[in-house]
Length: 309
Image 1 (cartoon, rainbow, N blue to C red):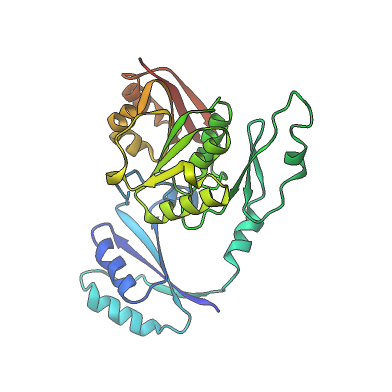
Image 2: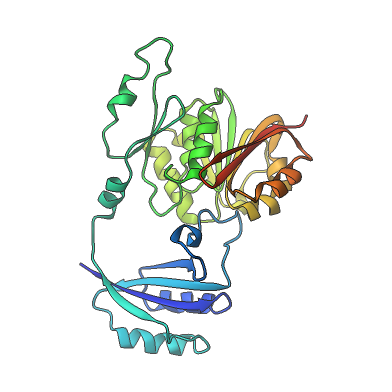
């Protein structure tokens, strides 16, 4: 069955009323994008900072409705529910239905990170290359993470996630505790557990992320070693390894909180950083961390270092 897609522009101040109105009118989903960005990559929200949802001054909202929804009725109802907003730019189009899981599978082949870590769609075959790992005594057997991102961010295809996965794969995680700040699909926490970590905690401000993380942990048989929390409910504890793949602005705002979660001598990795944003973050975290290094992949960076004892 096809869907009816409504696209409109609004300001940041109008957004809460319009989104509430869309939901009241039965929108099946609402997507927010930066109306002023030049490319789709610049428009996307990657992972919101913990406890905050970043929004731009000018937004493009896209909402999906059942195909038989009345276009005129939707516009009249929106004007009544949010009278101060301007709906002159609203447009409609039909969107064909599809098997969304299959569409994701088609665009997402199994991916390798580092020497032995593989992220594989949950119902795809294990690659022959992964099965062959470990045949030589020098090689490590492959570590396979089965993933279904669901509605949460994190599949390994984005450079920020790849940078974190490669860093985790390079570490000796056996017996270590891990904190994943902005856990999304749970991909980083679950990868750490599959690589040998004893326990992991994921924090995210999106309830869908907690659901996806729990489901993926079950799929990978590590659910008993992973706990996920909204920010306000997270335990006040320190960890051997902390990884935060969120926005640079959130990494700056949460620097004290993130640093406090790393045990003395523990390791920290920060990602979600665009090239050009690193100097401020390096200065911010230099107060508590040694050996800070920057690793780049495409236009994105990872900063990692060691908590000062």
